[in-house]
Length: 273
Image (tube, rainbow, N blue to C red):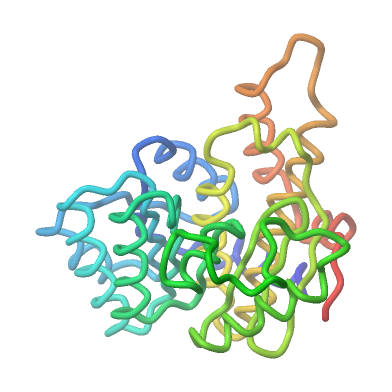
């Protein structure tokens, strides 16, 4: 199934509108090109309606919010919903400030998302409606580990069911869930955390995967996570003495560019629960 999702992405060349943060915008664009999609970056409220209308998917990333971009997110999101396009939310830093948390919660309340992708802290902030850990169920931990995996899978499924979408929780162990099923994914390298933007790149690529595979959205989202993690493994294996995190970033993008559906199928490490 993951191989088919990759092949469909390469063949269908999804056009993705990104309202993303200015820290990683270039890397997101290059990652989308590497996976076979096409990126458009636009966050001006006066043009996002038109841009969203010609795209197949919308990637909303709240990493560097301002009043103009927030307005654009709602305009583009409503238009994408009207057209039945894929919409993904990356709630970067939700829980870290009132603006980020309130914006993310408002987006989730007012728009229909196919996927919400974030780390466990960001997803917890959305699930709780605040950035505090006070009152959190004891089973909802600060990291997904082998020891708490059953509880975290249940949490991911429950949140996905409440929001009627796919929830992707990324970290050392990745979870990609809808209300009934959860992919538990173990691809990746710890060194990926030394690069700014791997999560943002994944959100762009995941939007493209889901857009290109509307009949298998959960598998497509999982395929994106496996692709990113496997690219991290391949990229790290290709590092040379003297290479650092800047080179590693490029090697990850190159690994995605050169990855085939067959390579993904052979290297993906996951189980379905």
